[in-house]
Length: 296
Image (cartoon, rainbow, N blue to C red; front, top):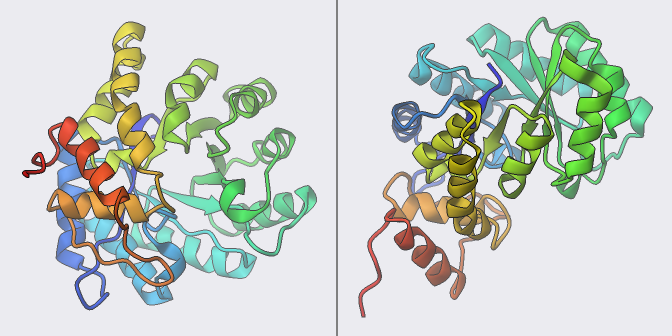
């Protein structure tokens, strides 16, 4: 289940700021057709922090319905409140998700023992494969490789999304855990490096705009064609760069709008991408044939 390019899916919103349910279903269909190996709704890129509880659950339901069993759906169900994370993860299981993505608790900054207690409580409460999500740049807490190793013995904790950008951290997880847990890249810049260290795939922002190319890079790695994987990785680097010229998901939401995949609407406190970043983003997409070149 945890292999290749999986998309950290944006949540399309209409002009009034409501979830565009039909647009979301179309996005999932397009991703599957393009070769994406997994759909990950309600993560950071999906603006989960500003979805209501009801919207969050509905987005998960739509993703599962649209994927229709063709690829796994890994539902974002984390929270900084353990009880709420359990509730959302129970919903994900009931809705038919294949796994849950669980972010480290943000703002309240638990220590490493607190992280073990938090994730163990969720894993004990819900019999569903669970992916730990470590993104200290957004949560202000870094889950150490030793902590991942403590959690890897739980049968429901099966993978970790590493978004530290640290090759060393990934290597330490692989060294400490072996095959007990799959490692997924959560930082597109480091995808190829993390594969070399033992990762098996990625939950990707760039896959929102270039899913076929992302899938091709991981497929090349899996068949042992390192030269092709390296070529594709470097070809994708300009897209990785512009996906993060502002706070995620501001740039990727602007990109999917330019491509006609979604509307441009974001939820406050996020605000639209502004010039000159808009021009830079469009130029990068145009260079890859994803949008038309600007005309004078």
